[in-house]
Image (cartoon, rainbow, N blue to C red):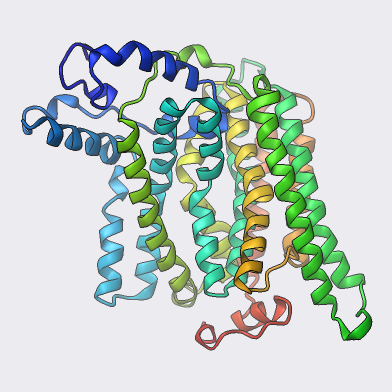
Length: 453
C-alpha cells in the first residue's frame, strides 16, 4: 500500500511523516535472536486492508478495527479462535469437563502464536535489547502460566510433566521434524548451520541436566541427616539452591546473547527481513498483549482444572497428556515455523527456535517454578523421578551428538523423531494413579479435591 494514504494501516496508524524514523527503528529491531521472532512470522497472513475503510469512517474506530483485523485475522491459525468462547461457554453451562479441556487446549494454540507476534511488534519500538528481553520472557508464556496455575492447585506432577514435555518436544519432535523435512526438501544441497549457537545451548542444557540429576541421585543415595531431617528435605534445599544457579546462568546467557556475542545469534537471512515493519502501534500491541495474556490465564486454569477428568474420560494417562499433548498443541505455531524454515534451508533459524525454546524452559521456567513454589509454600523440587530424568538425559545427549558436526541430513531427523515416538509410547503405557503421583512429590499427601482422578 502507498505510504501516503492518510490512515496507513501497514504502520498501525502512524502517518507518512513518521515512516522514515519507524523504518530505521524497525530495521534496527529486526536484528534480534532468530528463535525469538521468526517462528510466528511464517504463520502470518496478509489481511486485506481495503476491507476496513469501506465499512468504518471514524479515524479512531477505523484504527481499532484495522488493529483487530491484523491481530485476529492476521494468522493462519485464526480458524481456532472460536474454541475460546466455546470453552468459556462449556464451563458456564457445565458441559463435560473433557470438552472444556479439549476446547481450552485448542484455544491456547492461536493465542500462543499471537503473543509471539505482539511481542515482536513491541520490539520494533523498544529497540533490539528490550525487545529481545521481552521475547525471552514471553517466549514460553503459555507453559509458564499453565505451570503457575498447576502450582496454585498443588498439582506438582502436572508442572513437572508439562515442562519436561516442552523440552522433549522441542529437542526431538521440533528439531527432528525440521531436520527430516529440510533434508528431504534439499536432497541435492548440503545443509549447514553455525555450530557455535548450538554449542552454547547444549552447554546450558547439560548444566540444567546436572541440576536435575543431583536431587535424583541424592534421593537414591542419601540418608537422613541429624535431628531427623529427611532426605526429601535435603533434596528440596538442594533443588532450591540449584534453581538459583540456573536462573543466574540464564541471566548471563541473556547478556551473552543480546550484548556481548550478539552476532553469534543473528539470523543469516536478515536481507530478506529488511523491508519488514510494524503493522500496529506500540500501545495497541501492548493492550492486545495484556488482553491475550489474561485469556491465556483463563484457559490455562481450565486446562489444569480438567486434566484429570479428560484423562479419565479418554482413558489416557495424565503423564501422556502432560508430556505429549500439552506441548504439541501449545507450541504448534512454533513447531510449524521451525519446519518451514528448514524447508527453505534456513537451519540456523530452525535451530534457534528449537534449542532456544528448550533452553528457556529448562534454565528459566523450571527453576522459576521452583522459586515461586518456595514462595507459595508448595513443595516442588528438581527431582523429576527416574524415568523422566532418564528421558531428559538421553534427549539432551543425543541432540548434542546430532549437532556436533555442523551439517544435517534427513537421517538425523529420522532418528530424533523416532526417539520421540518411543518416549511417547513410554508415557502412554505409564499409568500412575494420581494419589501416587502426589505422594511421590516429597511425601506430600494428595489434596482431597484431587482424589477423584
